[in-house]
Image (cartoon, rainbow, N blue to C red):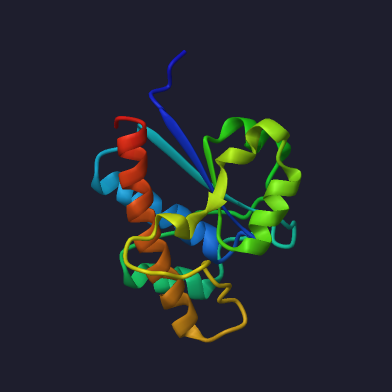
Length: 163
């Protein structure tokens, strides 16, 4: 059965309450804006189980809402071994989580694990920093990096997968 989904993307951070759900929500908005909801699937997860079942951090939600991005319906989950088979692209927010994913990935699945910021077009950051212990400006900066990277990612996916 073909469900119409052509590409599956997983965004990953540590606890799945700040960066990765923000990336998921931003990417869903981009997909809707480009009429690609039924062609690309996006999800998010954390490398750690600290917040399973919890919604995104209220500061992430507030920063997203300011940009027309809703994420209050999302719930944190932990990366599962089956994610490496299911998803075509697994995008970590930082080097630490990338290293964890690469260590957990089956040998044949490591090539699909990358940093999200590799797709940034207007920023030169090495990673999307964790805003959890910082002030509100950190959440804005995270969204700046995510929006730029997600836009570049979508361009890449459209070209690579002929969408």
